Length: 73
Image 1: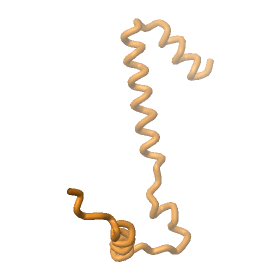
Image 2 (image 1 turned 120 degrees about the horizontal axis):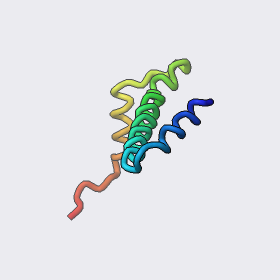
Image 3 (image 1 turned 180 degrees about the vertical axis):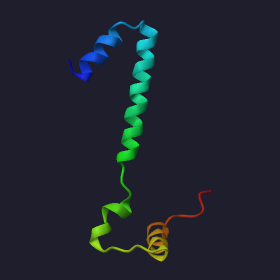
Image 4 (image 1 turned 135 degrees about the horizontal axis):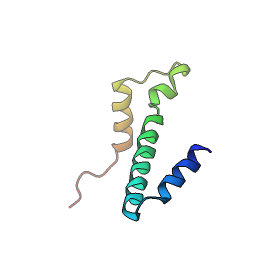
């Protein structure tokens, strides 16, 4: 019997309220695994020999927000 089949068999024996708790727990595990699988951008471009400095980020911000109107009144 597979793990899935074993879990389903045990789940069916539980009262509805406990089944909801199991569902919440499975959702928690899924979210936790999704967060672990995210990789940093630094890791994604690690082998591309790209170096981004604080000044590069500041320049990009100035470029993006340079023409943004400051007075909203």
